[in-house]
Image 1 (cartoon, rainbow, N blue to C red):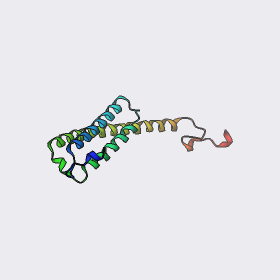
Image 2: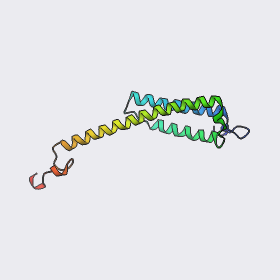
Image 3: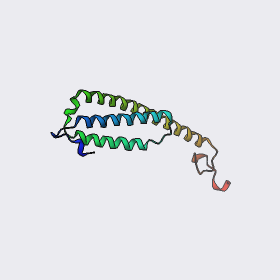
Image 4: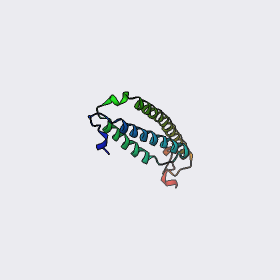
Length: 130
């Protein structure tokens, strides 16, 4: 696949770049759907797929940034930008929710009676009283 990514004149092959950008946009939209449908979803497959696409995109574009002036590429990259913005907001909300859950668990574990193994050490009973 990498061999097809170099245009005959040495520049970026527009069709290859557009295919990669469309695939990357689809992967990101799929990740967004997975986060919405199941907050506990395993996102590692999406991370691997995004990394692979970004690597392929870098190989396809290389140093030839003239592809970015192509009308279809501008549209495709605009759609990618929108998908990335949505993905970022969903992931940020997910991170905040996880942080809130951790805070509740910490609060509850600190409020539970303890033998000193977990929770607040100031409330732990000395070993002589156990």
